Image (cartoon, rainbow, N blue to C red; front, side, top):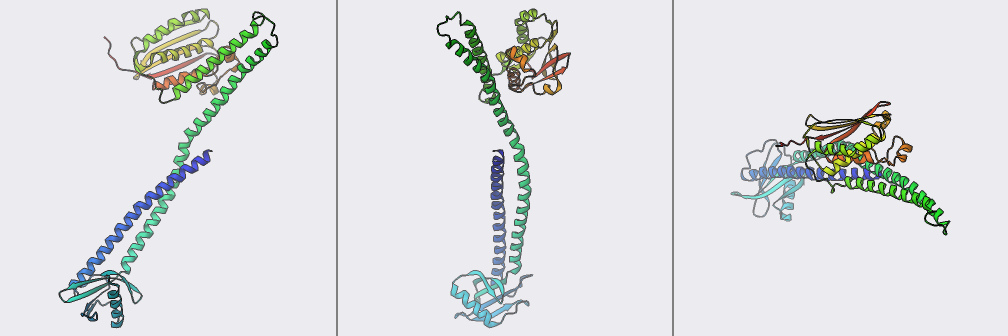
Length: 403
């Protein structure tokens, strides 16, 4: 699929470049040829009006005609070796053609001619044009050679750039394929459980709802899990669409974080976790309040899930190099280095069994990453196995003076 796309792009690029080269070189060739022909006609016109004045570096002859078309006089430069009969035959052809200018062969050489009137009567001037034809031929060869070499070079450049441009398309396609495969896999399990429990309910049609409550509760639980998964998938799809950009406005991120910390107080207390905070006052960013709350909730939920018993969570918010930096650090098992760079991928889970127990699908951190990107920031993690994990969010600071 991608090989065909690559070949198609290269073919289109080269076709366009070839067309452009042909057009440019064609114009150059035509302009140069016309310029040479104008120069020849100018020289011929000068010979008609002044036959005795030689044209430098040219082979030429001028004939003066009588009223019946016979040659009355002729003026040759020293290089012309043509007898009178040959010249008369050539003159007769020109007179019969009725053309005032053109090209004609004389003694195995090609000449340009121009017929005109002077005070002495009708004259025809001839100029040997081999040197001019050679100039045009050399120009044509040069243009073809330059064009060929240029197109070969541009072909390699086009292949390189096409390969480079295909990479993000290929990555996006592979991610979409993986996303669909992972989503199908995640939906398969709850659907199988729902089907199994539905079959059990239907196999006992005479039982009361109370007797069947165990299976019905399982169905309800899996339905909730599927709803959560679909909701998260829709959130990601919405954020991936360029038309759904967040409405950003100046926000006091310090107040948002402080209010969210209060919401987690009860959960932190229930889990016997010690909380430390270091929040700088009145830090402003250009953001969306609801999305930032969701971002904080995702990272805090993750920290609480992975904090060890009687562990510690530290929340820091401060300004650094024109950026607002938020660090949420929790003590615990940490993350292996090979997992650290992949934790923001969709459906990626370091410990699948544990995430399933806690209701996770591996989408939360992907959603967090998408939110941060829409705020023109970045998110990354640092960890030391057996000691701690830190999630760091950096978002450009908004300069705003508050009274």
